[in-house]
Image 1 (cartoon, rainbow, N blue to C red):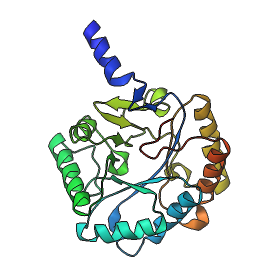
Image 2: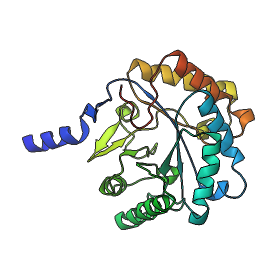
Image 3: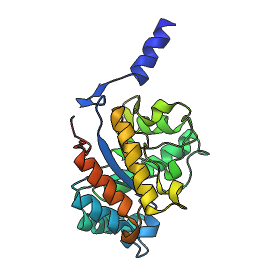
Length: 249
């Protein structure tokens, strides 16, 4: 029994990894998209997020699928043209749900993704599954391939405990950053003002609890991106450190 408790503490109850103090709040701006949409002359839907992040000096973690691989290098160049501080992450090789995939299938998705990015001379060390989908094999496959960070979560899977939205978890050598703010999915029938107020309200609650503010801002058009601008202005006013993959708080 004691060995079991020690194992659980080692796996889940931790405080620091490589001098990254996770007892203090910090902010992470992320986004994800199926790259097939971007390669069909639709890069403008990502442009707004890239420009807003740059304007507020916030590194933007963008998780994309590398298919079609022959256009990946060109796509990366265009994205960095809007914001050179983009941090690329793996979003699966194809944009399919992971919750029904076996361990081997998920492993193959990540291996193909890593190879595609390596061929394009891009280093990636973070993952997010498509549709925020996962099952009991997901973290195992991510950790076994030595990814450093994972931003995947699901509002149904292992989200019964409130703490999962306030503190990250560690599985082997992979840090899991839960999504701590509502995505646009929850606001389809809400006004921009309602979305903006809710994001800021939840941010302040998380700051009080010294939680990690990990935002999933899906690519959208500039005219409806005011909530993201207001959120970044609020974060800046609160002097919350922004995580860029090597930031030490």
